[in-house]
Amino acid sequence: MSATDTLREDHKQIKRLDQVIIKCYTELYAGKDIPLDDIDKITLVIEEFLDSIHYSREEDSYFPCVASYDHLKQEIRGLLIEHEFSRRIALQIKRYLKLWKEGQDSREAVARYLKTYSVYLMDHMSKEENFFDKAESEIISKEEEFEMYEQFKSVMTISKKMEDMIKEIEDLENKSWCKN
Ligand SMILES: [Fe+2]
Ligand SMILES: [Fe+2]
Image (cartoon, rainbow, N blue to C red; front, side, top):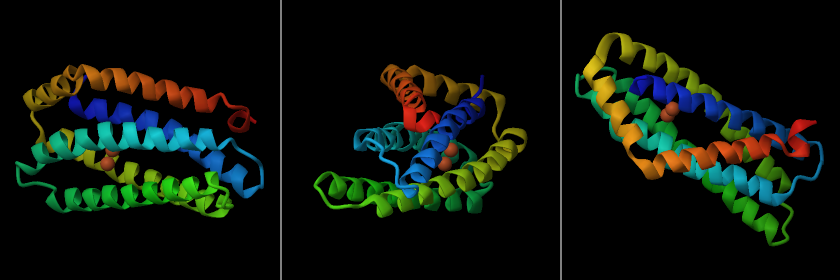
């Protein structure tokens, strides 16, 4: 395994989450009821897995390593802006979910922001995967790949949290609204 492969692996899990999100907003638009706690779980995985683990691997290690070669700077800038955009959408999902829990019907807004999030995810990850291919083949050294990989793996609390988050995704996949 290398650092780039680790990020690709993260993306595989994020794609599973994306499938859950697609199912969720589709059902909401169709007027079906989904337990708000399940939507809460989606926002939890977004926060704990995407925001605090995956983005931090990219923003704090991988991107700076690539940028240190003075390469792909434009691309990195674009990806960082998209991360910020996604954080804002996630906040909106949480905001409307909270209002919904408080009794205000926010079905439409929650569905709409979930859909926006999913569109972002697919677009962002495909751009990033092209970026990974370039970075891997043209820029990052084998030593750096290994070093960052070790760094990703060495944070025990993160490995544990990763496991928990993958379990959460699995859980969501097994909900009846998600399976049918
Ligand atoms: Fe990213
Ligand atoms: Fe990513």
